[in-house]
Length: 361
Image (cartoon, rainbow, N blue to C red; front, side, top):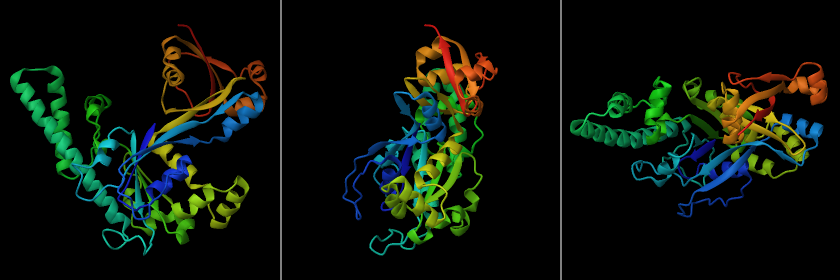
C-alpha cells in the first residue's frame, strides 16, 4: 500500500515523512524550489511479530509496511499543471498534511493559520484536477460512441457522467456510493477525490498533548465519520525529536506529553483503519512476518500477498489464532489441543491469524 503525502508548502510534510520512514531527508525552512519526490518505507511495528520471533527464533523478522511518497508542496491555483498532483494519481490513498502550528519565521501564504480553510482549499484543488480529467474522458467517450457502438464504452459513460456531476457540485467521488464494478471501470483514471483521504493536522509544539481533541480545537468535527476519510494529529517538530531518541528516553518523553504512542504509530494505525486493513502472520525458522491485507480477504488471495504462485497453487491454509498459539506455547502443542485447523478457499482471513499455506504448482 502506498500513501501520498500532500500539502501546501511549509506545512511539515517532509518532517512527517522523516518520522514515518527514518529517511533523514533535508527539510528546507524556506523551500529550495526543488521538485524531486521522495519514496520511503514505514514499518508497521507489531508486538505480535516480536512475540512470534521470540518463540520461533527465526533468521529474519519482517514487519508489514506502508510506502510513503513525499512530493513538492502544491501551490494554490495550479491544480491542472501541478506535477505533485500527477504523482498522487499513482498512490492508494492521500495523506493531506495540514498546518496548525505558528512560526513567524515561516509565514503562511494565506496569512492566518486556519486548518479548516486549508483543507477546503486543497479539496478544491483536487476537485478541479479531477474535473479536468472527467471532462476530457467524457468527450472522448462521446466521440467514440458516435463513431462506433462499444459495450464497454456504453457501460462506462453513465459512471463518468455521474462522477462529473458530483465534481461540478463540488462533491468528491469518494462520497458516491459506486459499486465495485463501477470503481473498477474508472480505476485507470486514478481520480484523486476517489482515493481514501487521511487528514493529518500538524500542531504547535505546545499543543502536542492535544492530539485527541484536534477535531474540536480546529472546527473539524464534520470530517469525523465521513466515508473513506479519517483525521489524526501530530506535532512534527517535537515528534521528530522523539523519533531520534532511544526507546526508553522516547517513552519518557511521550509520557511527559501524555501521549500513548508516537506519531508514526498513530498515523499508521489511522491508515490501517482508513483502508480497512488487517494483518495475518507467518512464522517459522527462516522468518516471522506480518502481512497487511484488506479485511474480508479469502485465504487464496491472502496467500497471493506472499507470492502469486502460492495463490495459484493454493491447497489449504493451516491456521491458528495468535492468542491461541501463545497460550499453547508452540505449534505442536496447538495442534495437539486442536487449536490448529485446516481452512479451504472460502475461509476469510482474520486479524492475527498465524497461517501456513499448503500449495502445489
